[in-house]
Length: 239
View 1: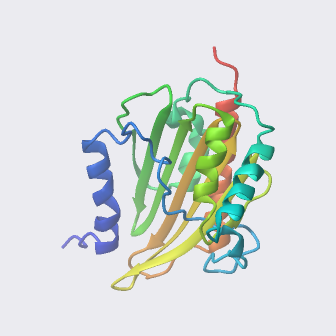
View 2: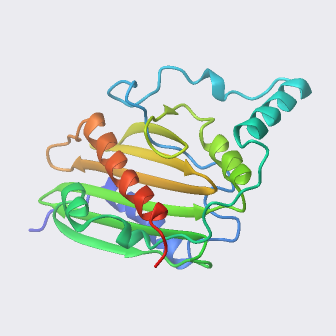
């Protein structure tokens, strides 16, 4: 008798069907409103919770808000530069050997529909090997300007994760373990900003028979590898 699809996997797949049916890329884009971040920096503990999240708190008065706006302006040098015009194909951004190592097993993959592929694209890979499950998303969003991308990044980075060094102009990560009826999934979400572009990588894994997950470090390192290749594809000259 075939083993029933774990509830955690069923729940994980449901948003994909919904996103695909509406074309994923609504006009506002996935980072227009603060999404739930999901990755942690290398200084976090096994559960991926960052040690210091106090800097992401809200400003208490108008003066604090003004200082925050001034800081954002200084970070971009006050310029409205646009380093990138188009998003590359996210399904071609990662080497095949990278995908097969991060998402082993019988692979399902594809790009989600987008209303404007020049500025917003996303690819997904998922597979079961036995009952060991992995899921990987890579998305690009090209913002109107570097300052606009910085503001979108800052909304993401206001969560409980922490900075991630060595990728793009700045990167943020947060990790978490989710559990449903004993089925655990270790997940990392890594957001990278390069100029006016944002790359978001979500990577997770778990075993639905052993009720175990890969280590937080392994999932985080996998997300970082995918993000590095996605960034290289973004920076590759067109043509």
